[in-house]
Length: 355
Ligand code: 0PR
Image 1: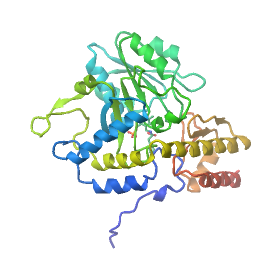
Image 2 (image 1 turned 90 degrees about the vertical axis):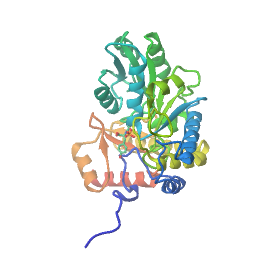
Image 3 (image 1 turned 180 degrees about the vertical axis):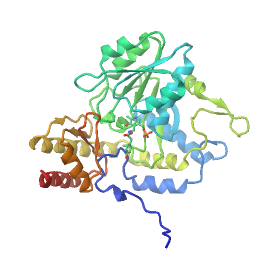
């Protein structure tokens, strides 16, 4: 017998504590389904989605405190990071270009270095698990084309000292990139120095399909510089439009439409409320784990890491919890919007049963 309905796994994000994606907002879901056959890669043919894309970019500029922002909706943070490296490499006239990133930079930078044939210099973190500024300074030289910082690291949710990294980049005439793929939607509500209006940030990644609650695929690549967009553009002779700055050709109009729908609805109050709820849940979980004797990495954004034994980790998995681990072996719980207090309470109950 054939099954005609394709079911989604894991259904409804039940027990998923490891993902940086979440259940799309209902308005995002609805908007996505209306734009399934549109292609923002061909903006003169698909004009409506193209206008919506400009609106998303402008709104992402508001989220990141930038005006006159340009950019586009990418397939995800990987593409946006690759484009940042590509723009930096092609903009600077350097024989043997290198890119300096802190150790916790997402693995997409390794892909970028590989496909673009640039040297990737990874530098250690401080004890606080953020980029070590002195180590970054020591790694930069005249061939450095890009210094990248992470604002919401994948493993621990930590935020690098971006203004200091930007100064170091400027000192060697390199670009500064901020990878806020995950953290970007919450940073405006934190104490971090996040308003990039005046800071020398050249490119930025912020993904609506992560904490933005849009449908996949909706990544965000932003810049305040027309010259950077021009550096990325190639000619497209047979399309109605004459150039394309994106990495992929045909792109998802669904992602764009869902991003605009959710940004109109949630920016800023909805995101602020979600941040406050998730942050207090993360703190609750950190306390609950610490009270049970686990070593916990204090959450600065809604992401909790804690040392647990291999045995407990595997037993939790067998109970149906979707979990992941840091390179150091800690259990890592991402408090995305679908991760409610109730879900976390039931997770802690499972831990109590198994211990
Ligand atoms: N930059 C940062 C800081 C990230 O955390 C990620 C992805 C990226 C860039 C790349 O983004 P895309 O995956 O959109 O290209 N971080 C998660 C990871 O790789 C993504 C993820 C999402 C993982 C959903 C699991 C999952 O179920 O671990």
